[in-house]
Image 1 (cartoon, one colour):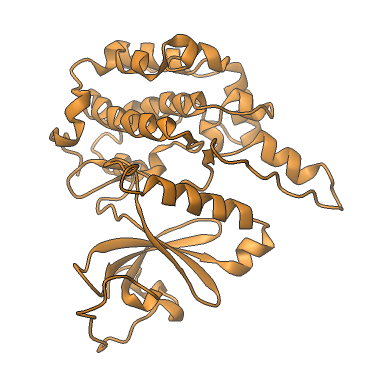
Image 2 (tube, one colour):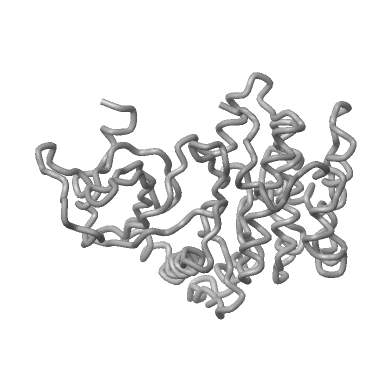
Length: 330
């Protein structure tokens, strides 16, 4: 039995002798998938590797969200926002090679299911830890940073801000190219965003928490910590943190607690190792800027085109990234 197969819950199990459908073209139930093993876990969800039991028998990832946890944590609006954003990014006119696609959503009495693109090689955070020096080469970091920037440019064009960019959410497909994933913290600026309802026992608590913190501690921006509205430059800040992590294998704002991490973020307390490449250092310094309008990539600094023109990306063929052979990782 494959590692992770024993963790599949009963409602996702399919009888071993049940044949695949030869006529069905669209799924109507989670039973239309052969759920093979668990491949990831979040606070309210578990992700499984599965195969369609109809059509081309495509490989997929199934994100399983327990309804009781969604209700308990008052996340109905957040889950619906993620579904709507993924659906919008997955239409024929909006889909992108470097952004995860939503194939369908399903449900049973207990669970919501998001059926999405499957990335065979896993996430970059895990991959980096398997590299010989637990960090990328300059060429690897430039390539994967370029694909990430291309994905960000696309979703920003569609008025979507990711708000949780990090290597854990950058998946690698069998061909070595990326998929930007996990839009659970994302914002669609074409839609109003509902504020969470205050808890009568603590009227300021949840609302204040939501306003001040979205995403993951080492990648969050100073303005988000101050409760200010984040624009697309928060993703460029996270790109800077990610480039640092690609090249060092470490978070630039690492510390022993969230409080100390947030202090480092707000005071820009980080240090480059001596062997950090000069052009990468210049890029990171241009992205890790406290004032959003002064970050490279902001409208005031020339937009995303100015970011693509940075010396770090010299040699990147932006119009043919999808057809560029990725550098060897695993």
